[in-house]
Image (tube, rainbow, N blue to C red; front, side):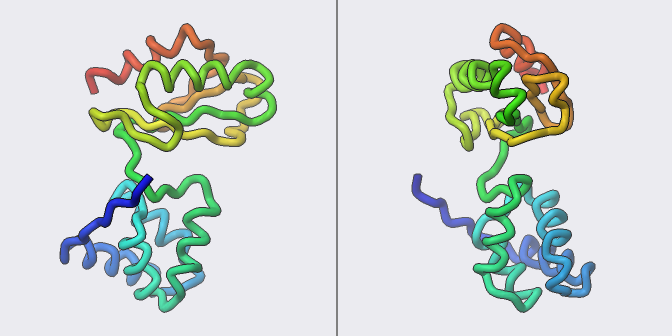
Length: 162
């Protein structure tokens, strides 16, 4: 997959700088800065990471290392309704793989991709802390428990008109 270069507008760069200043351009606040910037832009492409590194006076490699280490951060745009399938042990044993396959089939995308209409993206998580409800799927902040492949169409249907 080739990376698309993102051209940041001046107002976007100014917004990133403003967020960095709100944390006193403190390198110790990197995770908070990244969290707030991703909340603003939806994702953290390399160009955004470069501005953050410059403002916090740290290396781009350090910023990239944090972005790629934590699964919450993403370098690709997520869909309007990001879908996260838990593939931790309890969920995996109870059929998360089949649920994941059904989402991929229905949306015609792979893990890490966004649907053509921009509504959905699929990601896998290691554990959401709801093992008693395995397998667990999250759509945005909403959690679905004991999900079976036959439930996938209905779950997607809840978001089709949004």
